[in-house]
Length: 381
Ligand code: ACO
Image (cartoon, rainbow, N blue to C red):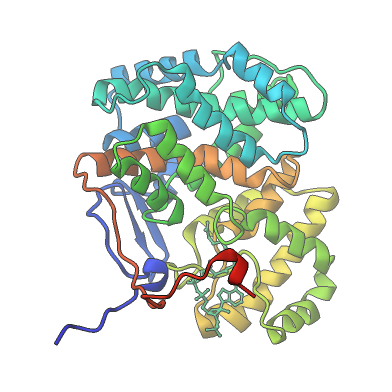
């Protein structure tokens, strides 16, 4: 007799590869990139170095680091055709949609886009990592009817992104905090978007297509869209005094508290702890301060109602929306910022999978009818 088919809804607890890229210790609330704790990387490293570490497996030597930084810096400038594209598309489009289409279009500028050889991939990786922040910053300006600013070679990724938004010298302390935000979002194991990128590369499609599959998957509210949804929830609640009643009402109606819960973490997400500190430093006035204080109260209330009892705890998105608001970014920007930093992790997974590639081809159990009689259109009721 054949075994009953087991359906793995949401692929929970299904392992699809072995990895050396990152470890999420969901029980103890720890996250390691290539063996290093994120706390150490946030303290001692920078986004570019972390991206190198994730993609190539080890911290670069001084020589490799300098080449990496120079290569990234040279590739930040947007192609003139890309600038025209950004200036012509309708301005209502959220940055994540603009980023996904623009990254996919990068392949159109690369005549050897399909080359999956490691030497060729190096330059494609540099191109994707370097141009993504420039695309998001350019879109910020185009939507305001302003000129796109060209990158400055003397600035690092975080500083340059802030510079390309405003055209003014970035505040180095703020840029340093933004750099830490990029590190915190750079990688997170076999999540929906990384898997999506892997599925695409498993067909031996090109890396631009694989990365854009990952961005497409990130955009949903249950994944990368949660920072914006959290901000919206905090705005609806309005102020710390209204939190307790609002949260209880939501839970009674079986609504979700945005920025809480995670498939793997069953304790406080370590990234959220660091982001809470950063948000506290940045959100010192105006709406950002008000929403940060509201968030603190939601956190306190839900630690009792959700985290301690049901293991549904703050995730990376809980404080990130407020952080972006404090940085002056519009509310539809968080998924794009998330994507531009997560590129490092996606690329690492795509390359790692490619080295042990097998076409990803799961099955679906058919539960419909068979042998139905075809009824011609004119005879159907
Ligand atoms: N608030 C209230 N209840 C919740 C929440 C939440 N945020 N998250 C899960 N639950 C409850 C569900 O209602 C469900 O309850 P039930 O068993 O009584 O029906 C139970 O917990 C299990 O929920 P699932 O959706 O099956 O759990 P899953 O592991 O798939 O959920 C997810 C993970 C999607 C992140 C979920 O916690 C959620 O929707 N959170 C809010 C959105 C969010 O913050 N997403 C960002 C995730 S982090 C990231 O992707 C970067």
